[in-house]
Image 1 (spheres, rainbow, N blue to C red):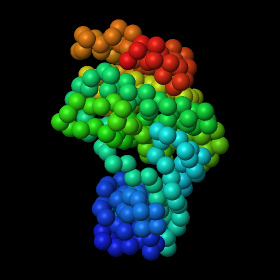
Image 2: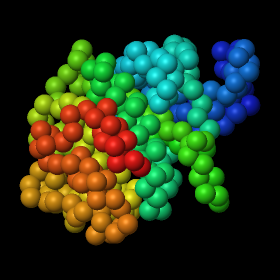
Image 3: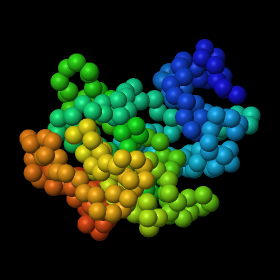
Length: 288
């Protein structure tokens, strides 16, 4: 059953707005009457209609997202979980409401490098927390990064800009069972590391490849590897396709930052930085 704007859910949450319809259900903005704060409610409805993902698989992912978020409570740059439960035949998550926009809102804007590295550094802090708990996000991309504190008109005050990683239903853990126990091909095409396409073992460095894609895209407006179609793109990703340095689009980039992003985009994960924490340290040493 869909929640209706203007109604009260569980005699606690006033439903204010339908934010998004996704593959795992609808997301609503609501007001928590007990805590007097805004929340986001993610509803998974018991129906096969309107989704290409089978119902049992959607339930599996939804419940898994609850378990993962429970393990990440208190992580500053990861969306926070408040509640989880069943409502009739449906399931719900009550999450932190983030008053901002996804990073994808600014795609094609050619972000200044201090702003870009500020947001990415915060995302890396979130990923470092996940990786320390043996979790791999597997779907790190602009639409799964929420950014707050950005004014569309004024120069950004970095002290006010905050980023959080969201949408953890594809996370792989060391104890994952069922549909994602093997290195199944999941994720989003343009942001997937070559080893994901090859269905080889993935680890934290696979997420770091995705970080490199996001940085490249936000800096240049282009994906680092481009193809005429999806099949051509996959062949280039696992074959000989190589990205142009960002300096070929943005000559003002610091050479050390350009080299770091190219390291993140190395096809062999052994040639990438070892961890999100290492990337943070490199960014700090560059001084940007």
